[in-house]
Length: 216
Image 1: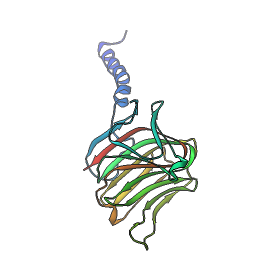
Image 2: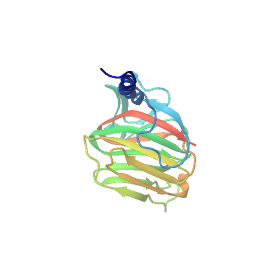
Image 3: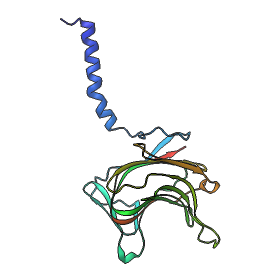
Image 4: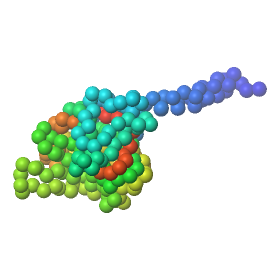
């Protein structure tokens, strides 16, 4: 016979095992603890369970739609340009997480513009992962600057959970499974950005479980 005190303790432990999974499943905390100091405020949390993209989304190039509970994107030859999708959330300092799978394609980028023109991007292709300061198109002498790189390269068919955080002039980019880590600083990073951009070259890209936090 189990003593009353031990029985109550056993029940409490059992309750923890029953409750914990549901608490964890509903958690909106980042998968990796952010490194850059600041308080997080949730801005976006979607698993793409809707039938269509909402008003915050803007398909600039390519074809983008919700398909089988995921955001699906592909390049259109008629555009003569990579597929581009904007999530119109004005931002400055953020933490963003999402799953992405290049099912058939050559390049994927998470990109941020400044008020006028390109600013920086995470570029992923068969050569590797790179944090790139974009060139200033208004300056003919400007060139892209590779701030940081990581290898091996992008694996087609593999799902990566990407976490990107940036505050001020510093950026840190990590794969939750440890596949890659890169980051760096540039004085021009420290400015407002009008949106979050997804750029893809290829036939099939899937994005899921997108979460965005403002970093204060």
